[in-house]
Image (cartoon, rainbow, N blue to C red):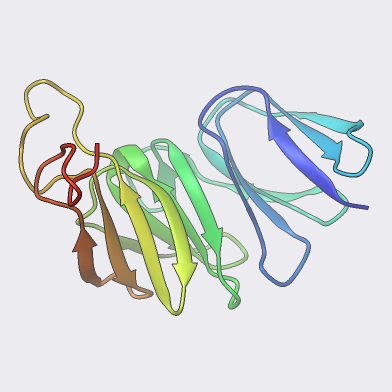
Length: 178
């Protein structure tokens, strides 16, 4: 049976393990609903505390464990905006408002953090690289600052920046992001 978990509010992210039917979820809403993808029926609903944390579920939808809390330290989050998992059980979390990606093992233990990113909001793993979409500055005071995005950064799996796609400023030109 295939199931999908849906959040009730904002700023939630989901990642399914690439080889096993496991789910990692970043949650900042009040409840999560589990839906059957074949029938569209709601299977269950889980009430959660509204704080930034990661939840790991079994294939049958049972909560295995959670980790994280609000903050700026290792294993703490300020809007965990996106999650990806690799074949080696590493969990990569775009910790958007802390301007970093945090890396955990499959049991939720903190391993590393990658800096030099501006509001990372989406990630994709491909060919041993992590592609990170970064939101540019939104405040009037720094909106037009160069080198802060929006852009896509290409990193190796140790967090080293290999390349950046996008102009130094936002805009409508082919080399710019809006």
